[in-house]
Structure formats: C-alpha cells, structure tokens
Image (tube, rainbow, N blue to C red; front, side):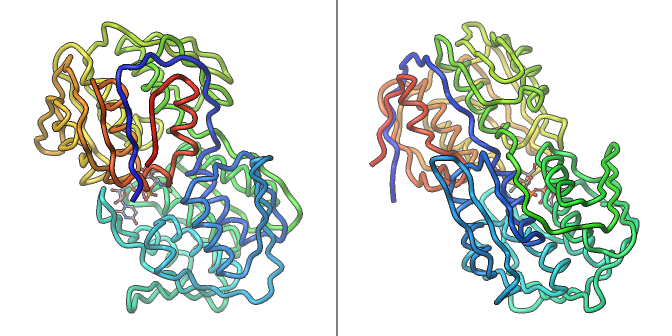
Length: 417
Ligand code: EPZ
C-alpha cells in the first residue's frame, strides 16, 4: 500500500486550481443513465469517479475520458442494458447506490448491492428505500441486494423526509423525473451539489423547482445531446483554505465560486484567518493568532461534516479550548487518535471533540481511515516538526485530485512511496 512522507514546517506560497466537485459529479454521472448523449466538464478524475464510470460501463453505457480537457462523454444507446450494480463496485464506492433511482425510472427494475457501512458510520439507506416506495416501487432486500421494480412505472406523490439526507434526496429526484404526474418532496437536503444536479436535469427539460427544503418535479424528460460543467469542489476549497491559514505566506485558490463557502469563510474569519475573498478566487494567509471557536456540523447551509476533520487541525493552533459537535455521522472522529499521537490535545465526550491549543505537533507514523480524516493528517503533517509518514493513502485518492502535486507546486515537501 502507498504512503505519503511529509516534512513539516515549510512555508507554502503560490496558487492552486480547485477541481470540480466529486459529490456533484457522482449523482450527475448516475443521471446520465436517463439520457442518450451527455458531456460532463470540469470533472475531477479521482478514484470514486473512475469507480462510478466502471459501474456505468457494467450497466451498459459507454464513456470516453479526455483528461486534457477535464471532461467525460457518456453515451447510453439503450442496448444490452444490465440493470445491476454489483457488490464489488458498490462496496468500494457507496455512492453507487445512486444508480438505483435512474435505473428504476428508466427501466422499471434494478438490482443494486446494499452499500454497507464505512469507517465513519453504518451509512444505512432506509431513507432511499422509504422514498422510492412512496413513488410506487416494490422493494425487496435479499442476499445483500436491493431488488426494486415498478412494472407500471413510478407515480408522482407528495411526502416528507423524516430526516435530511443528501443521497436519499438525489436518488429520489433521479427516480421522480420519470414518475407520472407531479412529485413534491419536503425536508430535502439542499447542498450545492443537489442544486447542480437540478440544473443538469433542467437541461433535459425536466420541470423541477426548489423552494426552501421543498422540491417539486413534473414528469417531462427529453433525451438529447447536452453538456454540463460541474461546480467547484467546495470541500476541496475549504480544505486548502484551512491549509493556507496553517502554512502559507499567501495561497491563491483559483477556479472557485466563493458563494459556495459562505459559512466556511465566516467561520475562518471568526477564527482570525486573513482572507481576500473574490467571486472566482480566494487568497488566504497564514494567521498568527488563531482564535478558539465552537462549531457544530449541520446539513447545508450549516458547517459541513466533510470539513470537520480539517478545521480541527486549525483548532489545535488556536489559543484556548475549541469544540466540535459532529451531528451528521456517528463515528467521524477516527482522525483524533492519530492526531493525539502527533501531540494534539483532544478529548472526546458524547460526540463532542474538545481541542486545546495552541499545541506543538510533532511528526509521527500515522494511518488514514477515511477520506477527510486522511487529508486532516496531511494538514497536521504540514505544520508538525520533522517527518510524518501517512499509511493507507488510498483513502485520499478517492476524493482529492493531484493533492501532493498541488501542494509541492506551493513548496510543500511531500513524497509518495
Ligand atoms: C453525502 O453522503 C456525501 N457523499 C458525504 O460526503 C457527506 O458527508 C454527506 O452527504 C453529508 O453531507 C456524497 O455526496 C457522495 P447523508 P450521504 O445521506 O448522502 C443518515 C465525502 O467525504 N442516513 O446526507 O451518504 C446517515 O447515516 C462524503 O465526500 C440514514 O439514516 O449522506 C448520516 O448519519 C463522506 N438513512 C446522515 O443521514 C439513509 O437512508 C446524513 O447522511 C441515508 C442517510
């Protein structure tokens, strides 16, 4: 397994191009099942995207990647379609469950592996199945698979999600676009990635509106040659903003939409981080006196769970006791034991992490456990003294395109072995 070797305490400076959003590209790739010819631009070539493309090929779609132009062309000629998402593909990339909605909508049946849990939690899919049943699907669970069918097609309905779920909202939208009549869903997730999916579907003629947490969908869909540019990855952007606040004389983050990170900007400014915010680029500077802060993770537009591990590193450098309450996932503090081995002073009680600082971190051999925990170990290594070795960095490659290349270009000392 590959490792990253990082020599800390280098002052970074330069500019970084932020890639397209992995969490927007995944549902939009699933949505290409509904269309015949789709070009997706600004796609991040990370492992989860490649796994989703393999899944689409397994189902019977064809795709052509152009790494130079950062785009992928997906063709669904509707021949030899296999409405199955096998365990071997879904177990490594849970978002594979997102093909369930479009397969059901277009082919009226699907056999999709239950994704199973991961390091951060059990990751159930009950809300996905609850919603598809509301749309008239027959659902059976057998041998670790979801067997879904709608022999007379799905039908529009009105219902409310009991709790907010990004994936369940996406799956439901992708199913409802072919349901007869009107579908009105309340208490939806409204992350920017969901709005990007909605903008994509509108290009297919889908009549879809979002008002507050309510989404209304009227069945109209015309297959046609369309192209769509994925929004920037706000979690990658947030990660590098925190990186700059920890290490940089000046870091300029380009190809961004700063409207997507309003909450993160507000939080960093409250912590005393110096930022020069523009619509399409943000400059961030290493800040000397970082202030402590209390944060709770929430659905958008709250502070994202996907930046919890990263902001914790900044908190280790803040004066006083900071707090993070993780409200989205039940086990998302896996990075904490590794950070404590680097000298961080963190205690956890009832899903709240208490971080006291400023604290001097020293290099150590550590282990990555999940995507965002692994990038927090990279941030810690960049400010720790001497050398840090990070194991199991395949987690990183799932969601960060060219991470070490982007950082080395800004004077970081990182080597992959
Ligand atoms: C999406 O996961 C993201 N993944 C996650 O990012 C992100 O952390 C999460 O949303 C929350 O924002 C993608 O978009 C591919 P949820 P998702 O359904 O859809 C519970 C990353 O690092 N729940 O909003 O799986 C669930 O257990 C990843 O890029 C149910 O109980 O998240 C969790 O506690 C990690 N039943 C909460 O809801 C369900 O049927 C929120 O989960 C579904 C979810």
